Image (cartoon, rainbow, N blue to C red; front, side, top):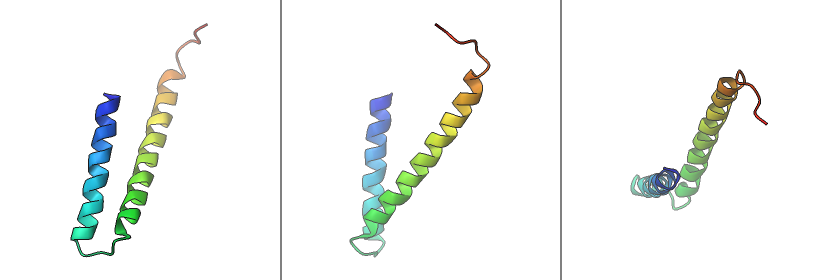
Length: 63
């Protein structure tokens, strides 16, 4: 599953970069698209980390 998500991220990034160029923006626009996608991914990672922390905080510690 991890490799699938990595490949999906690569495909979405390539599509977003191409879409910004096809929309008529400058050739530097894929940089902005990549930055926005990175911030979205960071936000999702923080949300996943926060929800996992609450879920497992009630379990007893394992040795």
